[in-house]
Length: 288
Image (tube, rainbow, N blue to C red):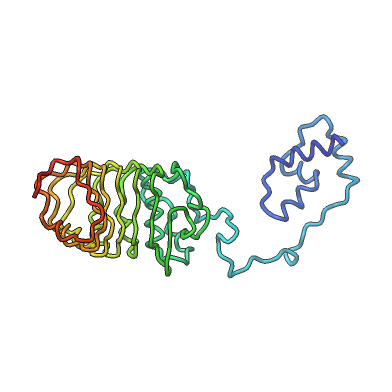
């Protein structure tokens, strides 16, 4: 009937927030009290339908099931006051002003500092425009987010190659203290590699190639004794190669081509007997 159509179209624009609200909206008379008269030439017919329809029953508090005290805040993936809005996370934002700490306090599968670190990566590198952001900030299970792998309650792998990251590598990434792989190949990253990265002794695979990173390689990279892959090719790195590269005896791949390195090629690279790939082309170095 025309009255049904008017009532249904009017309901379509009403936000429904609870079972109680649904029941209230089933009565057009109450609808008019809250929202004013229904804008329709068939108002009289609509009122007639309301009078003849079976009145709805609003559930009493005792009939409304109480929320479970043990249920997780994001168990049903509903919006929450502590859930950051991805549209609010803009490049250059800091964690202040965004309730990320409150959000991460609901995470149980990894430590809070690791949670805030990976969200800081999202914030710093324009996460809202990533090629693939499946899962990011839609639940409180960061180990299920695209590019994040966890083992034994810690983030072990951050792999976001060719994913349109734009910005710098935030220094907070060093708070992911059990990180074994960081793969940010093929993005639009600029600035220096965070100094703390060279103290992350659990790193085994560091692939930051095909970006626009700058700065020099410090002697502290000799701390990465577990490193098997170091690929920094295709950036704008400069300065001399540190002799400490020759102490990374687990290396199977060392790719530093396409940068602006100068000086002599360290003779210590001869110690890397396990190398299967060595790429130093397109630099400004001379033989050692």
